[in-house]
Length: 344
Ligand code: 1HN
Image (cartoon, rainbow, N blue to C red; front, side, top):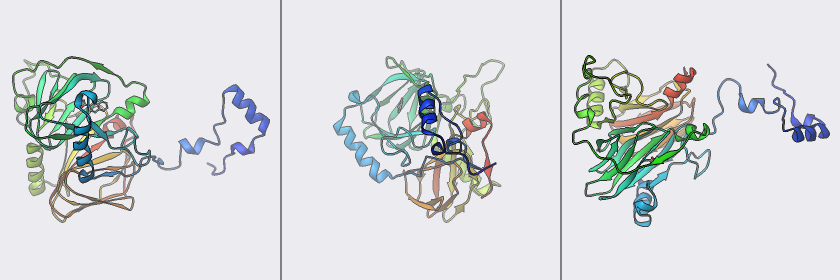
């Protein structure tokens, strides 16, 4: 291994011109850019999007832009490392805050990237995924896996806001991102599978009579997540109660590339997780505290969102009892065979 690779300037002018004309370039001056030593050199920088700053802008978008002119009325949370307007919060994760007003509908489409929504504010809205009507209540996680038809509607009285997380950047990079438009879906007249087939953890429709769908459970009601985290805090062995959202049939992550992990920080608690090779974004369902990310402090409050680059040194501290949901790309990295955790 050498630290002094040749540079472009080392090479004669006429040779550089000849390479240019032939459409080739030397690897060695660029090698370290794409293969830094020891750990990646992320472009992503920590972002912090306070609800206090995003909410009024989103409500204003509700006045300025009818949903028919937006299809999805969203403010995108841009990675500061890539600049405002960047369609991503980390290398693989797109985040946006979406507003739906009472009576509005967001038309049906399907696309190659997968999405999941965490409901931030309001009630009475619903998403229809492949004909299944999914109520959206605060803190719920609602999936729209790639290739599944989805539209949104709102029967309630007040604005509903949710956080969209998509693996869109990855699909753009793969040149695999596209959508197909369709008509609003007919809704099956029954509660969603979280209230029927998967009402109870550990119970699934009998295998002798049913063939599970690839995505059997689309909605994960927050009430259950919070109740489970509380019991983990009381009786669990882990220092910190954390729950991964999983497919109830397979135990695998809920989506192919994105994972979702709910955590509870009891009042006054601190947590110092290992450095992880995945990128993450945290959404604060409830509570107040701060997180140091590579020495930078994010003072977070209820409904805020903040991002964490790969391999960052992270420390959380909760001023009040706090519940956070972490969106991450660990499932993708595990599939690629390089997910890694390092001691701090
Ligand atoms: C999308 O389909 C939704 O269905 C939201 O609500 C945000 C951002 C990019 C591409 C598709 C939605 C999106 C999106």
